[in-house]
Length: 189
Length: 290
Image 1 (cartoon, each protein chain N blue to C red):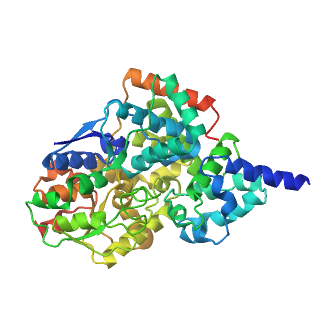
Image 2 (cartoon, rainbow over the protein chains, first blue to last red):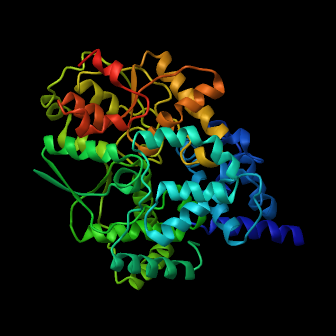
């Protein structure tokens, strides 16, 4: 009985997220998994994730590394014969995992996304150099050394600028007010 | 003269793809398009913000759309990621009343309103549908004499179904290349993903995707490849040497923004188009035909 309740709750939770409503339509054909450029890196493939949601395996899904390998290329979404928006499902899993601080230590992508978003939140724009430097510093400074040749060639070709684009003071204030309000509203669902 | 509100996005304005921004403006002038930059725009948040906090990322785009709505023109961007985020926001606001209610509430905190009337379009869509292949062809001053070009669309310009071209086998860029006097080579991976921002966090995964794309283009006879997205260009261009090192290959395929190829055909100079900012040199390949 307890298990059944748990199952229903997770499917309902995901169905309520915009884009997640199609999850009950899945026929497990595997087209999404076969189309995915990064399925072989995922602990659970896209079609497995759907089956796991329907089996109520909330923690296993949300603490896995799978959705963090989604490249948002939408190939699964346009190919799904049942019209399930798989890319939106991946974003739904990511969003809940972030809000609940669920561990996903087997990929650096959440940390990369987090440093990207922090810069955009603070500045309203993305300074590419600062963002990359910050990410490497937080995760693995040694990897930054390996990237030196790429960075040098970008510099040589005037592709890197240190200065960030800034919004007007009014624009910055306005954007902050909007984003802070959004954060207080507790997600899309 | 046709008027548009212009959304360059971070990469094409202050970031690594400034040459895409320059060449977009240069080509637009020749085609009598006025791209007026949206004042005080903010970053679209791209895939990272969308993954971390979807509601906030819709608010990022909704602010830009609300600012653009005051102008009344279509909002045009050369960046596929900005394009997908602006469109995702528009479609979520239409489809999901609960998202609209929350986004409206957040916008109100910044004294903004968005009525949902702005069309967000990719530059390629505008060029082929508002200007047209014939008009583009009529501006050609330099013969590309059959330069073999791989037309690379990547993912987010055609997917999810955003309307102006086929989600897996698009043709618009192929035809554009032909209208410039170039020869679009068959390119089966034309709408496959370059790996995007995961080049930073999952390098080996993405290098493998880049290798497949380069291999596909070269084995189909391409002398250069054109992209419609700043991130695709950066991945294929700046990381080509990493691919060569990892897979012991020797790719040397120039990766151009499609507006750079247009500008070359229109007779514009290296400087106007920022060709020197491309990492794999295009000098030799272009010298043969110009």
